[in-house]
Length: 166
Image (cartoon, rainbow, N blue to C red):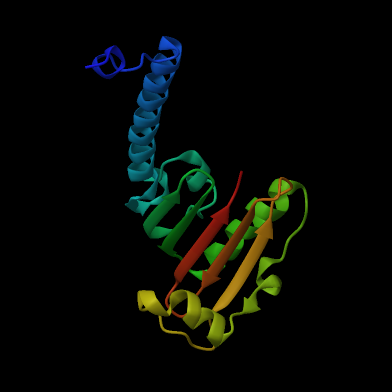
C-alpha cells in the first residue's frame, strides 16, 4: 500500500475546525433562545382586568375599564388583544390617551368608521365573531410610526385590538 492511502490528508487549518465548531455551538444557542422567546411571546395570556396585564407596553394600550382580556404578544414588535368594554369607556380612553395625552382635543366617537362585511369576515370569520352593521373601527398612529387599530361591537362590548409598535 502506498503511504498516501494509509494516511488521510491533514486539515489545512486547525483554526478553521475550531471556527466551525464555534459557529455550530452559536447556532444551537441561538435556536434555543429563539424557541424560548417564541414560547414566551406567542402564548395567549388571559387577564381579568388591565391591572394584571404584562408587559407595560401592552397594558398602556388597553383601556383601564377593559375586562376579560386575552393578550397575544408577537415577538418582538406587536400584539393582538381581545377584551370587553362599553363604548363610552372605550371613547373616554381614546380621548385621553390619543388626544389629551398628546396635548390635543379628540372626539373619538366622531372618528369611528364602519367595518365592511368582506374585510370583517376575511379577518375575524374564522374566530367565530359574526359581522353585523353596527361594528366599528378606530385607528390611531404614533409619532414613531406605530399603529393601533381597535374593532368594536357596541352591542356586546367585544373589542379586538391590533397593535404595531417599535
